[in-house]
Length: 516
Ligand code: ADP
Image 1 (spheres, helix red, strand yellow):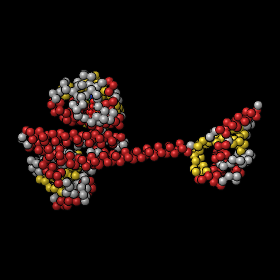
Image 2 (image 1 turned 90 degrees about the vertical axis):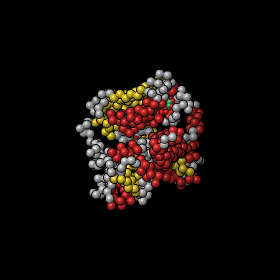
Image 3 (image 1 turned 60 degrees about the vertical axis):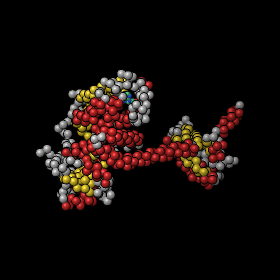
Image 4 (image 1 turned 120 degrees about the horizontal axis):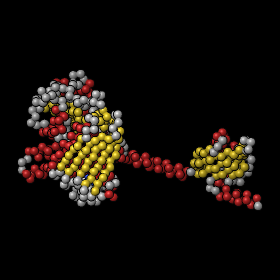
């Protein structure tokens, strides 16, 4: 009876593809299954009562290291006094490398002395290889994604430069052309140009978000001013559709908050743009308010309410996904990429914020963004003041334009026309420095990417030179990437992102001009 049971047990352990071995308290082998004997090429060897080092003599030299290691790790298990689990690499005949997941369980006699050690091992070589393949594939994918973002960033730069000319010159042309039909053609070019630019920016943003490349740059921000800026952007659009566009600024909001105004604006522009787009009658209302006000923290809430076509319940989550647009909207009627909400959602989350939506079909929608725990800035310790460093009369201002591309120079000249500015031109940073040696301008408009000496390096030199450092330098950049632009903050007095409009340039210049 007993022998039969032993037979069964032996058959059982021999059937196991895992290695099984029982050693006594001194490390001598008492029982090993076929898998174990096969692995170490010990089939047919009388292993009984031999320890690892002795057994190493009976098999191929290649196993010597494994046996040595095995003995050491047995000791670790004994020292631990509990199950020890680790991975061992075993090099077998023909130099095949195998990885084993080994488990060693010490068994003690009642009096605490060593009774024996159970050793179990499973071949995990294939799992490990698959794991590694997965890690490699992930790294590969991340690398590809990084390259994609870089490619898009570069493309965006390359596209912005010609777009700058297209949009800028159509702006100028549409002012000059009197013929109605021609004027409408030029306007179409400008509108399409702007749409294309918006599309490029959206695609760039979403790919940057996905690659984790968006940086949140918080600054002390005049919230009321920010809301007025936004209002200005949409007034005309709302008027054109005869919509009542209202902006409500709740009194419980402090004047200054520590936020990334650029990114918050970006979210609001998307949401308000949608509200106006999907509303034909009635109103769009934007409400700024504070919730959960604490000593120096609050939740900053912005609501955008419209009386438009609304969103079906089943689509409320879908619309926040990339490229998703509601079924309800008739295709073609409203242009769009379906990226705006996805971008807004990601951006909000990066700023500890949340977007939610309430809506009823045919009645309207209400989007709410809440940024949690926003820091309140006391005006007394608000150090960021506008940088008006110089006193000039705006008339007869001497402006130096540095820009290597002729068409862009011509555009800036056209934009500055009728202003009585005295303009000098340079085609690279070195020319700028040469000109400064001869005559000082009141202000410099500096392109960044130029041959020989780029605008960034040239400005660094200017700002280090006692003779020149008072001259305001306004950067002109085709970088849509605001994170790059933020770096310019440290060195330039102001920066403009191409395509620049006449208003952009004049606004920026006027910052450095007194009203006297
Ligand atoms: P886009 O506006 O470019 O299509 P968005 O991601 O901004 O992309 O919006 C996705 C979709 O969500 C829209 O196409 C529209 O169907 C729906 N949507 C967004 N805002 C509103 C709104 N205020 N009213 C009705 N539908 C909206």
